[in-house]
Length: 597
Image 1: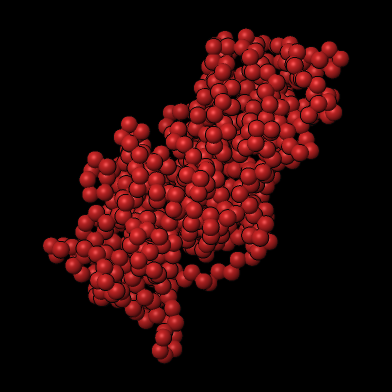
Image 2 (image 1 turned 180 degrees about the horizontal axis):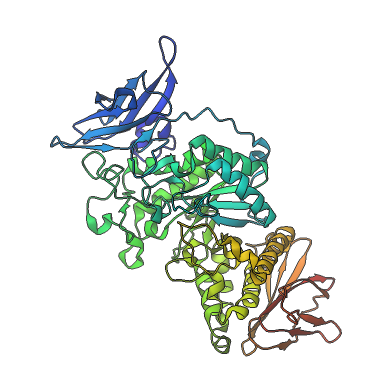
């Protein structure tokens, strides 16, 4: 490890030096384990673990005295250990290893020695051909590993990584998704935090098995043509005293002052002005991409890094912004084909611009404005949608400022917000045709797509991490038909380049109708080099006749419709009269052949 790079926040491989590493002995036969940690303000440190019956084995200061080391030929892979760290007053706390590759299942807190070079990936073909999907369809299925399906009714009954490969991969393929995004898999103590308040940033959570089992899951996804994006949290961490908090008896990873030290979620904020913290985080990002072959990172709560506490009125956190720039540029230099996505609700400019052009260097930014405006529109009674008509046109006024991804994530189906289907206005029967039209609008709109698990079932119960999805919904015709519709829509999206090839080029989108306020009718064209598709929507509760100004568009032929099982819901286009008859809550896609381009 480059010590100067570590201190100045330029290191991407700190995990190869710090932590517990099994190595061959330099002299003699066999192997040994070397433990290293960074704790500049500690007065002394010992390693305690299974290999020494949890008695203290003193660590020695190395390099400049801020690093500590201990070597054991008794410590073996699979054994547990902790660092007993004494502060300057002589008090000690037993900590897990910040750079540890494994941890015990909560509520236990020990780190676990893991080998990093035992697994052999078999995904060479995938790795050679993967890309950031800038001009390709990107249809992401967001998953919480522990509650997709469960082997029992107990909250802490989970399938492991290997079992989930057999369960999840066929489902994802059948349903027309080409990527999965997994909510954080770093170790964390509280199930209710879903992984967003981590204690082990290099430790795959033991809830679902070992590090090599996770590697096997990613490997299996790749061999089936499915990419894997991991949720990564570079802004805050859990307050638990055995982890990063007050690690060496002082605020080593966090701010020392509470006004900026605590997040709105009660966690501790990383102090990005410290080079050691930057090296810790960007090395963790590199670790997941390199050691697990992850195809991308979705970075959580980026607004809280851009602005102090996420509040523009408190000003830009320039140190955190510089950290994001340096990390993203470094990751893309090392892995130009991975996806870096920002969850960011701010209007901070240049989030997806290259760092060299003054941006933050992300590939995609979640379009939270589109998500909020669109869901608000569909919550509204049809008689008020004329008032809110331009909530559905506004996104195209700012769309080309960034490279956006359209998210319907876990955050939209919890904490009293209601599920996506439940958000649709009206009674049970009214919700399904609106949801189908809504999703057709989403998939035709420019931008990559993300859908949280269960949305495709027409889930009515809000998501609960303690329970699996309500799979018995598929026993009900309306939900089963909705599920089949979503499968067909997903496959349509993957198969038609007009919906993805020119996502971020103004030539890929053109309004046909965006002023039919009284009718709540919208229409636009999407195009690629070889394909043109018109998307037509009626979001009112009455049948509408619509005469489009096709500007010499040529011949229209319907190729997909939101009708589903709703009798009489099918859109009709009279070519001779150039007239659409649009049933209530309907959507249709039409191929355009000939005419003026």
